[in-house]
Image (cartoon, rainbow, N blue to C red):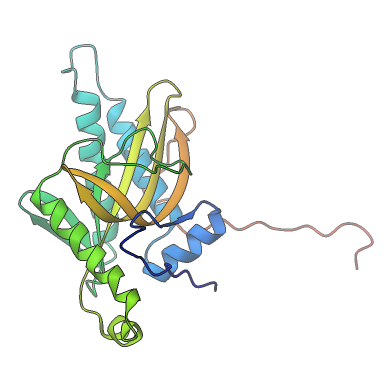
Length: 234
């Protein structure tokens, strides 16, 4: 399995990042973060949010679609991972889900139009965030700064700090699709995440109720393909 490591950050280049878009590389990196994390799981989570978004009616409040989508996305993510013994917890009403070994924690945020796209500027959270977000971003950055020291390997092996990753999604009204990614925030300014250490980009899911319905009990293991040999291949 290919190992993905960040280049050493420097004070002059806080925007340096790794962006993975190839599905096989994204899957490998997810497994490296934690064996429970799979692209199919995040797809189910995002589809759950889309389903909730589509429940609004003309009588709903103007912000109902976005609120319903975020609430359902959070609930889907935490429900699926809690079934795998991940820990549900909050910090000042900010909902987290953390791995059993507390090495990885995930929070859900809405992102801007650059979310889920391999662009130079990169995404940012759409809604302003406060002290909680700033706190875990600073911790993430402090951990990345360890790459500048010879002691990094020892610290990495014995590291007890939790890395907080963001499941970032953006609903594109014009294209009627949701783009999403799992990314590691490392910079925060004026209530916005400004830099990312790593971005695992999943792409987009069209908001088409006829095609995005997934049963709750559907396996989230990667799909397999049966190869039928051609005649004369024996």
